[in-house]
Structure formats: C-alpha cells, structure tokens
Length: 339
Image 1 (cartoon, rainbow, N blue to C red):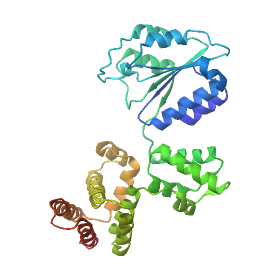
Image 2 (image 1 turned 30 degrees about the vertical axis):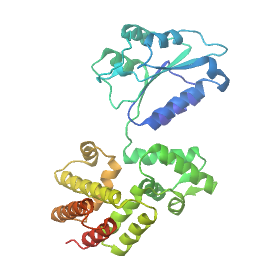
Image 3 (image 1 turned 45 degrees about the vertical axis):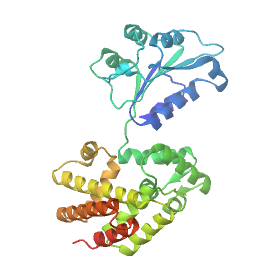
Image 4 (image 1 turned 180 degrees about the vertical axis):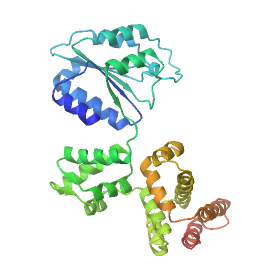
C-alpha cells in the first residue's frame, strides 16, 4: 500500500487529504516525507509547509492555513499531528476543536492544499462521524506492524532504493540479527549497500556487517542451549561478559525468551495461528515464529523444568548466595542437560 501511494506521489497524482495512522512510526514518517518531497520544492518549505499539534493548537488554525492560497508556488502542505479527537482515548488537552468545521472542510477541501493527518495511534474510533468521513473521502495509509511476508518485501524494496538487492536468506538473517524495527533495518541495509556498491546483499555480508544487539547474542545463546551445544553457549556467554553485559540482564532476557517459548507452544497446541498468538502475547509475529521453532525442541515438562531452574538462579543471584557470573554458567550447564 505504501509503495503504491509513493508511486502516485512521484507521478504528481496528489490527494487533497491523506489520513496516515497506525503504530509503525517509521512508515508514517516515510509517507509524510514522501508527500512533502513530491508536492513541494525545497525552497517552498518556508512559505507553503506548516504543521500543527492538535494537543496544543485548534483545528481552526490548521483549516485557515489550508484555505490560504500558496505563496510563490502551486501547492500548500498542511500537517496536523496528535489528532486525539479521532480516537476513543481520553486526552488531557484543554484545546477545543471545532469538529463540525473540520467535517465541512473534509467534504470540500481546498484544491491547492494537500492536508495530511498524522495519527500515531494503532486504532481510530470507527464510531465517530469524522473518522467514517475521513476514511471515505481521503487517501488512507494504515501503518501498523508488518507481518513477516510484508516485512521481507519491505526489506527487498528498501535495498532497491539504496541501489542494490538482497538475497532471501540474507533478509532472514538480517531479521534475526537486527530485529524487526524498520528504522534499524533501514540503517543496516543502507550500510551494506554502500559496502557492496552493486549486486546483492548476501548472508555473508549481513553476518559481517550487521550490528549485533545484546538481544541477538542472547538469541544465539538460546539457540545453542536448544541444540544442546554447551561449548558454544559458554563461548557466547563469555563474549557477553567481555562486552561488560550484566549477568542479571542476561538472565532476564533468557527468562523472557523461554517464557515466550512456553506461551507460544501452549497457544499453538490450542490451535491458535502465529498472528493471533502475536496479538495475545503482544510481540511481533516474527518473534512468535522463532519461539515456535525453539518450542518444538522441548516438551512441556522440559520447558517448565527449565523455567523453574531460571527462577532458582534468579533467587540465588539476587540473594547473594552465589557469584552472579558463576550462577549463569551453572545455569547454562543445567539447561543444556535437561531431559
């Protein structure tokens, strides 16, 4: 959807009103920037680009601006942010908004103005007349969390924008290492594209260049535990120590991940889809996929035993009964040998 809208913008096919909403901030900003870039020349920004925060400014001022003819240009771009009146949320703002006037503007917008509504909310209140009207009359982008397929398509497209391609296995590896945050992924893809110059980003390039987060190192640690590769697990652990990572933080990440593995296994056995599980446990569907893969290597009793061992280690570390680093090392030995 985003790619189609950006194509229209590049072809100078502009809507009078854009409703951009959702929780995925990077996509919202990407669309907003594309609108500004394609509607206005850079030298027009000072005269014909304005933004209003609805928690601080009345919608009336934004509408007055939108109804003002552009200065030394053909178009004007007016952006409103934080339009809380489109949601069911209670807002402490004391600013009064003339929603009837806004409805009138939506029904008959100024032809020389591109009006952008930037609503960083996962959901809008579909019961409200203003929301219904906007969805019928404006160009809508719903930018919520991408599923795995869309995420990989986005990675492929972003690589093209940076003048390169990316192999399917490399995209998978990048997700494992860098995570699912679009801003981070874009930064990593840009770095790799500059490194290779042309051609495709390969798995080897990703492994060489992608910045490994602590979460990824702990993920590799868990992979080693799952595969009962204790030597590799200890090697990763000692690398984390060399990076001055706190044993308690490492333990917390291990605990959170294995709890997720148990939850995903339980819900999967109840017949829930990965997408539904993601909404229940409130994590990205890709993390659910990885947790499901880990869960297949354990029975339910094994996972419960594992979580019990994590709880015991947590108590020992926080009560001072044992050196924290030694506690983690003994824990890994236990986990790798659980039956």
